[in-house]
Structure formats: C-alpha cells, structure tokens
Length: 171
Ligand SMILES: [Zn+2]
Image 1 (spheres, rainbow, N blue to C red):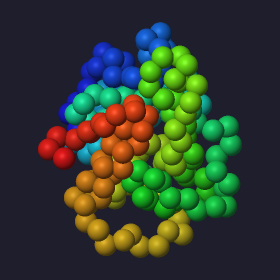
Image 2 (cartoon, rainbow, N blue to C red; image 1 turned 120 degrees about the horizontal axis):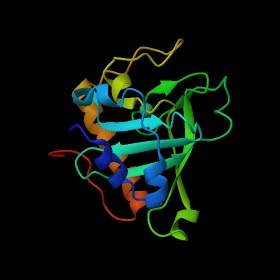
Image 3 (cartoon, helix red, strand yellow; image 1 turned 90 degrees about the horizontal axis):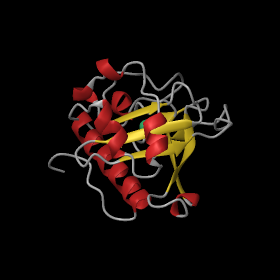
Image 4 (cartoon, rainbow, N blue to C red; image 1 turned 30 degrees about the horizontal axis):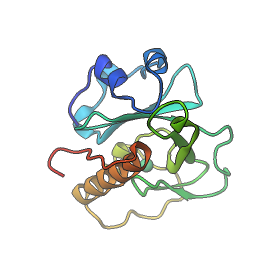
C-alpha cells in the first residue's frame, strides 16, 4: 500500500469523532511500517488495548474497532474473515466497528472476525506464522490471497460506511 502520514491516518477515520481521531496512539513501528507488504494498516492502540484501527489503501478510509474483553475461546480455532487464515488459541477476535456517521449512527456496530494483531497481510505472505497445529496452507498463491484480502476488506468497510468502498489501486 502507499505509505501514509500520521495526518492522513487521523484524517481517514470515518466512524469516530475528530477528537477521538486526534487522541489515537499510533503503533511504535509506524515509521518503519513495511508498506510494500501491507494491504491495510492495522494495529491495536498501544495505550488503549480495547481499540483497534484499520486504515485501507487507496481511498484512505479508516475505521476504529472495539476489541472484545475476552479473546475468543482459547482452545478454539477460528478463521479471520478478512485474510481467511485459521488461527488457534484465540488468535482471531470478533471486533466491532461503529457505523460511519453521526453519534447516533455510531451506536450501531458491524462485527467481523479478524486476526488479533491485524497483521493479515503478513500472514498471507508467510512473513508471520499463524501458530502451531495449523495444517498446510491452501494452495492459492500469494497474489490470489492479496486480492481476496483486499476484496474482503472492501466488503467489510462498505458495510461500515454504508456505501461501496474500494481499497486498492486497480482492483
Ligand atoms: Zn487476518
């Protein structure tokens, strides 16, 4: 994805107030982010572990999500709805994104299962391991996985925004 500035990240958020966007904390690795290997910028607020953020490539749409108190049952194996990586031990959580719009709209949320560390891009590229006990990956190639991740993210963001969102250059 194209590198983003801190100002662009804060300005991209469409489902929280400007004040909340101004208060978010960027990840420690923000200035070293592996942009070339990311399909979206995702992180947990380092000072507020119940808050997560996803910033899409291209249209600069960003959302804030709520992280559940309890991770998914630790023994269960769950699939991320964005990258379709299957992860054991609570590695995937059901996060909830307030709908875009005014404060009233934001009382409604859209949920999705997503990798706890929001590192989907690294899993599909084999740059991070999803954990022990996982069978060999399906045979789709990385390019296919990237397109699928971007499509799944666009579909999720479209539900949050309430209109169609495209997230990638040329897709
Ligand atoms: Zn994922």
